[in-house]
Length: 185
Image (tube, rainbow, N blue to C red; front, side, top):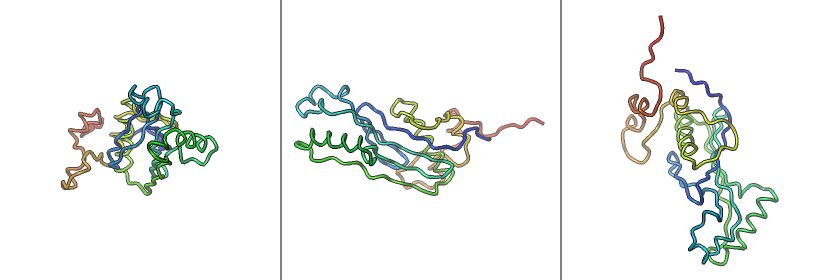
């Protein structure tokens, strides 16, 4: 089945109301955006209520160029981000130490299976309201499931390779294409 999504660069910011989000394919927790309006009341002791709004880490997937990056806007070499990091450190350095940006991670030469899998998990983050799209258009589930490659659904076990991927039945239950598409004669 052919998909209709154009390969493009997608930029998804983790935006989970002061929470971390698990990005399953990389077995990593990514920092969500921070806002004092979501801070619990007991955080006043720790001065979190004085913190400025902080952008979340971003997942950047470029299907055409076949790479994925995890970037932290706090690491952008701009005057705005430098001032923001200084402001964060002025508030929390006394009780938590100095903060810095998470290092950028780059994964190159992605296979069709990796692109499909990364895109599927980005879609899940976006659809559950834990991610905000900054660039590109997020394809729907059916489109992702119809893309070339397999969808990896199991990551942290020693299962045989063929058990790490969604079966045709699982893909159908996720709203994907049927296992066999009848062609008209």
